[in-house]
Image (cartoon, rainbow, N blue to C red; front, side):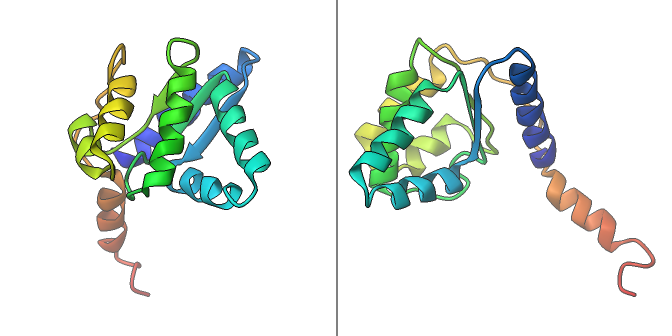
Length: 147
């Protein structure tokens, strides 16, 4: 339920905003790209890491849908380590911890990242249906689709 997962993540973020909490929402691929760009300036890079570490709620959508490099994984570890036991992090993903460990480039970092995410986590499983595929199929079968 790809589409529903993202909608739920946004709704939780919006509820946190209504409670006057700072929320940062990012798709994981966009965040990895932002970190790569910021790396060229050490101060900007540290500012991004500090902002992500200190926001009241961090929402990472499409988590590891696309792989990340070792430096992005290292940055992710630093962010999660700084947030651990202090601030909530929400992960919206089509996959789970077993896949994340296999996907991350460094096994030690992968174990550390997944342990931080999986320990004390609350999991909401929305099922196995990919709503993008389902919606695309439904749209294509409409009589006026090819007109």
